[in-house]
Every structure is written in structure tokens, then in C-alpha cells.
Image 1 (tube, rainbow, N blue to C red):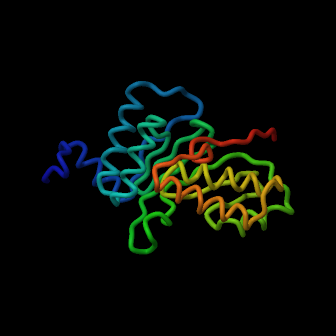
Image 2 (spheres, one colour):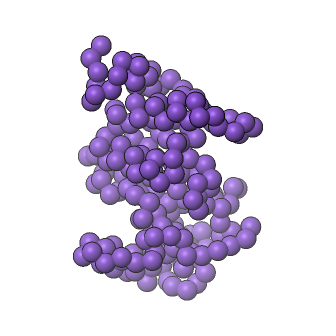
Length: 198
């Protein structure tokens, strides 16, 4: 068996198992992580993403730098729970050309959010990459990177609270991304700008 991208034999073996759909170690919710368990999951995560598309692997590595070892590693996804402002972060292996790279939604990030039933349709009209689950009271955004998820959820909150219309939110979204392309940033790309209590 030849090493793939400089991986050792053990990593290649783990990678082959993961590619076959084998389940990885998952962090136990009842026991704290040991250094060994974290190291095992990190190694498995690295082996798994070595077989992913470049876009998905890049997103996974960025999230590992930001949030550390994932809590769950599967052949097609990594999951972090309760990291940063997020209830859950999932990065998936998705491949172009089924959609443009920025529309693949490889990074899904979820928050708890008390969205009124009458506002759900407005959020869906604003952006199809933002979803709301009324049963769990979770709002999620899927994008190619975390910054766009911040932007979408900040604007979704603006729409839900009535500060802007759906049309204004769409214009703001396009304007902020255009300015980012020119090297200018917006606070809406850097963090969530709202607070709430469930």
C-alpha cells in the first residue's frame, strides 16, 4: 500500500477504513476527552480529509485551526459541538461541478434562535442557505466559509427583527461581499451581532 500525500501506513489504513464508511471515535458526552482520544480523532480527521475535495479539505483545516479537534469524525463530515458562538459546526465533503464552489455549502453552522413562526418564510425568501428548524429552534447557515455564515445569520436576524426588509438584506449581502472582494471588511463577517435568550 503506497502512502498517500506523505501519510504513514497507519494513516493510510485509517483513511481506507474511513473511505469505506467506517465510523470513527466520537467524543463521549459523559466523559472528558483524554489527550490520547483527542490525538486519535485528530489523526483520523487528517486521514479522512486527505481524500476530500480541495475546497472541503481547506474548510476542514481552517475549522480545526479555529476550533481544535472535532468531536465527531465520519468519512464525509467532521462535527464540532458548542465551539465559539455555534451550537454545532459541520463540514462536509462536497464536490464541484454540481454547484459553484461558493454555493456548495461545505460549512454548516447552527445556533439556537427564537424565530417567530411568522418570520420563517421571510428568512427562507432572504436566502435559501439559511434554514430554521422550529422543533429544535435552530437556525443554520451553509456556506463555503465561516465568514459568510456570520454574514447570512446577521442579516437573517435583521430581517427577523424587522430592522431591514428581505430586499434590503439581499442588497446588503451583495454589497458586503463586493466590498470584501475589494479588501474591505464588515463587522457582519467577523462575528454574530445579536444576543438572545431562549
